[in-house]
Length: 135
Image (cartoon, rainbow, N blue to C red):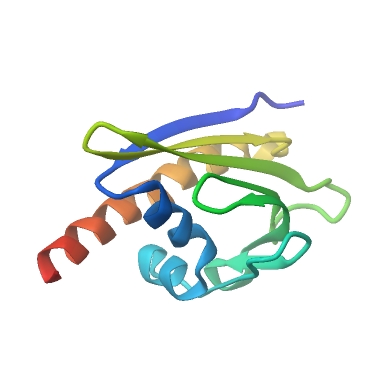
């Protein structure tokens, strides 16, 4: 079993705005620069990066918590889904995302760990900068 991936990042947004970047298909796609389809229902399916990552919503507390099954399309068929837990909390100057991602296969652990930083947190920071300039 690989160790949990644990990350926290603060953004200049509200918990509600950050939650929406995950759960609204159009905003998710705009913030990451890649196609996304996200159900807002528990048990509903989601996919991002044109289907490169996918899973199901296991628990949702709007603007506060997302729990999803999560897997890469590149994982072996026999690999179980991993579990992603994302919390959103108010912080000084914005809101913080707390991520815990467990059950990532050993051969993709480093890639997924770095992927969160590059394809989510870095892209989200750019999204907020661009959005603030436009607004």
